[in-house]
Amino acid sequence: MEQQFQSEQPDRTQVTPEPSKKKKNEAFEWLKAIVIAVVLVLLIRWLFFAPFIVDGPSMQPNFHTGERIIVNKILYDFRQPRHGEVVVFHVPTEGRDFIKRVIGVPGDTVKVEGDTVTVNGVKVNETYIQEAIDEKHKNNQLYNDEADFPNEQFKDGKVPEGYVFVMGDNRSNSTDSRRLGFISQKEIVGRADLVFWPMKDIHFIKH
View 1 (cartoon, one colour):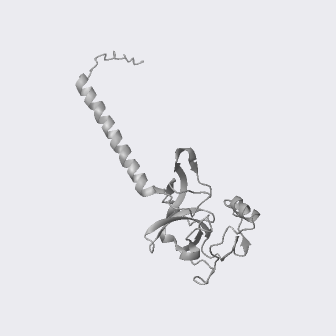
View 2: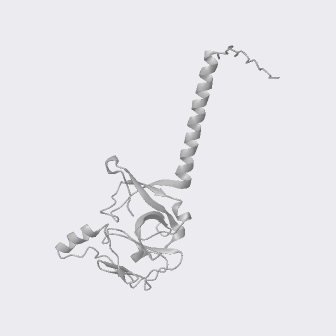
View 3: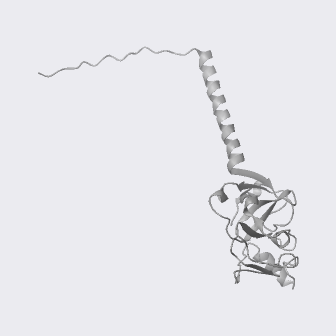
């Protein structure tokens, strides 16, 4: 014997919240969303990324005084710095942060003679400053008339484990590994990934 089911009639009773209570709920939801957003921004700001201001000419022509950059603080928790990457690092003896480019990584032998930079005996193709180098050479001038490496202060050109060799793009006006020696990876704040100010110059940094 077939069993029949009778559908229940829908309950059309509705409850409408009082206007004042509804407004309070909406205001609370908005406040909660804002608080969560602020907390997330702060977490991202302090744990993952950080803004820095370029100060000085050492990275010209690619970076200029007053530019604001975003530094990726967690990248090197997962891997080591690589050739050509622009990094921000702390210099304890100077009590401030520097921005430079990684030229040598652990195990590399670095040599700088004028405008020729070699790593493990192979000339580095420095496309990021080649135009500036060529311009100097047209006038029979060196782009790097500041310092070579190794030198009297640092006689060993081999990068030890846990360190990197860095140089500024403005080779004739840069305090870098030629003067500071190898930089401990423990002092590296992170990789410069984005120029976000001035607005007209916003771009991701090529490495």
